[in-house]
Amino acid sequence: MGSFVLVMDEFLQIEILKIGTYSLTVVQVAYALVILFFAWLTTLIITSVVRRYFRRKHLDIGRYYSVSRLISYVIYVIAILISFQALGIHLSVIWAGAAALLVGLGFGLQHIFNDLVSGIVLLIEGTVAVNDVVIVEGIVGIVRAIGLRTSKVETRDKVVIIIPNSKLVSENVTNWSHNDATTRFQVKVGVSYASDVDLVERLMLKAGADHPQVEHSPAPKVAFEEFADSSLNFTLYFFSEEFLAIEFVKSDLRFAITRLFREHGIVIPFPQRDLWIRNPESLHSES
Image 1 (cartoon, one colour):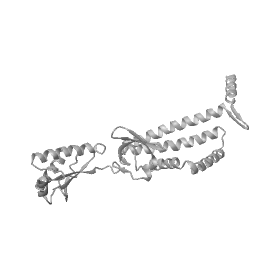
Image 2 (spheres, rainbow, N blue to C red):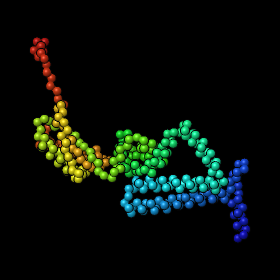
Image 3 (tube, rainbow, N blue to C red):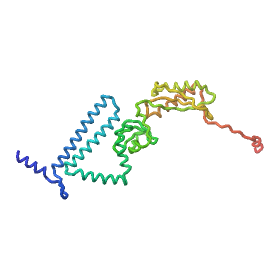
């Protein structure tokens, strides 16, 4: 037994790397690996506890994702710093390297540094979370992942777009899921001047009330918007929780409105112009 301990001690003291006065031994590598293992295990336990807490309180799953990622980043950064100490690398060397890195960021990596800071801001504030439906630069999609530098947004066409986090922080982003409530949408239509406006209103309200994805509270409303050149313009305002596929809900409503209008003789006009000829007799003379 004593010989085995002696052999193990000699094995752990074997030098793997030697550069000048610095030497790396097997025991130092073993310490570093143990530290990283405990960091992984600690992260697993803490995120599991946080997940159970969020489920018990029925909190937003996207918010849980942000909190768990932030906890993981903090634990792993601390573990890596302690691992460097275990490997015999003094933190003063790391700080000196970090200072040099910051100088490099100032000269050529401003955008990357901005994205990293924005990723931390997103994880802390939670203004945009996983599973939120957002509009970024006119593109509608659902947030699938928020990383430290970039986020993944899946569009309606099931295409994943990689978006720098700085765009989600510094630019205007519409988040339909942020307030956990229904959102108001609208469908516009024009009818001829000879139409019965009261009947138009009733038919449009019926189209909205009959659709299963249109909320009954608040109920749909119709607004008489304007007297246009060729039509009387109306807008159907309605609330819905179907954010990502809202265009199909609008399409269904347009189909229903068109069908109801035709059944009741309501005409949807197209632009028309009257052509007046000042001297029509000159056309006959030329012919």
